[in-house]
Structures are given as structure tokens and as C-alpha cells.
Image (cartoon, rainbow, N blue to C red; front, side, top):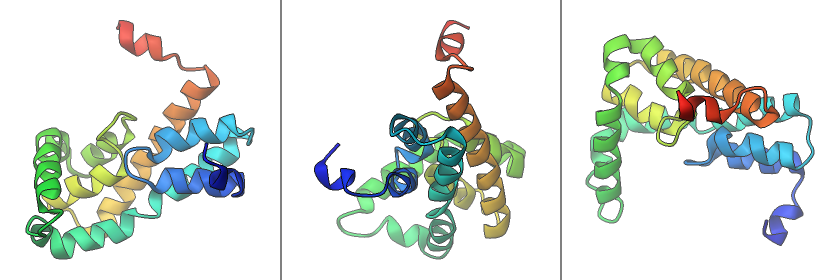
Length: 161
């Protein structure tokens, strides 16, 4: 890790990684465990960090969703991301609240809280309902990642079956 990261408290590193897109708690839990923090503490720090951007993102997307596609420099990225999420969010369309929770709970790339906020916006789910579904999904994803980190749940099981 870069030197400046080593100067931060370990707990803050976990929260920051959990709050970032792509890594989210899929990255923060293994990092926190590798830093020697107790897994239960890492789980809750990761859950907190992963949820920090959710409400603001839901609000921003709810108010400015279609405008984001027209931003000169970022519009291309947003259009690509929104189309990609739309293809993957059929479970959310079909099952609503529980579909969103399940979508976010799958700890794979492009299924976390950040993408869940876009999926919730695409299906026009209310902000409070979306936040609750995403919270449930993040909690389950954190549990799955924690079980993998401890070795209780083996990734090979999913690959072979």
C-alpha cells in the first residue's frame, strides 16, 4: 500500500475502501482482515463505509438521472454504465424490493451498492425503500465475503458447481 495509506488509522482505511465504487466491501473486508483487525469490527466498518454513498447517490440519481447522461466529459461513461446496469437489473424489475436486495447481496463486480442505486433508479423505486433494500443486500454481501475470508465458505464450491 502507498505510504500515505499506512499513516491512516486502519479503521479509516476500511471505511474508505468500502465507500469506493468497484471495491466496496468486497475489497474492504479482505483488506481489514489483512490489517489484523477483528473480523466483526471489519464487517461493521465495511457495512458503514459501503452505505455512506448510497443515500446521496439515490438522491442525485433520482433528481438528475437523465441529466448525467448529457454531461460533456462524463456522459459517455454514465450512458455506458446505465445501459449495463439495465441489462443486469432484470431481477430488480421482476422482484422489486427483494430483487434489489438480492442483486446487491451477490458479491460480484457490478452488483454492489453503487450499481444497486442505479438499478433502483431505473425501476423508479422510492428512495427510502431502495436504501433499505440496498442495506439488506450489503449486509448479506458482507456476510458472504466474511465467510469467504475466514475460509468457512470456499470459493471453489461456486466455481465447481
